[in-house]
Length: 218
Image (cartoon, rainbow, N blue to C red; front, side):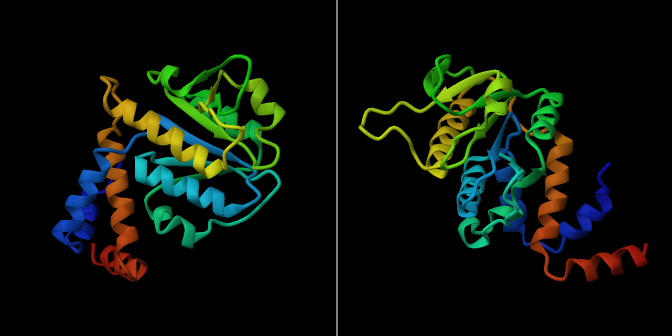
């Protein structure tokens, strides 16, 4: 449960414009789709994917760090790490099992004999969209466990896009379709309260000292 008194205390520190911005952004946030990146060697690509998630309203980014344990490039992310939830996994199995247990279908974003184009993709089902490495694409384990395959239509000689570009194209397309649908894709009331609290804390300098003083006086 969210401590509503504590939330009100923190939000009282923020400007009215900041609070209004939070509410406006949260009305466009969704967990109906979630993004997964697998062992991305060049971490600036993961940071760029996170930025696309933030811009287009995807609340959660999942990062599988089975081989490369690197940190988010904050210059590329440009502050997006403050507003997007990052879930890290040390194995593909753990990630896939966790997402399936939350009700997501596993969608591999790669050409496949059973793939479909973005415009034909069924957006009604909660989906975890997997993006692979720059060099090798998605691993065989993910391809075997995938419930579906999604590809971007291409008409040129080049047959692939950089992962951050692919993610941006797919995220923009699917979230735009989602917002123009009758699907219930919004965050729940409790999820919105959780984000208001987390974002308020992320917005306040010296939050640890302020928290300590608040709870000492209660």
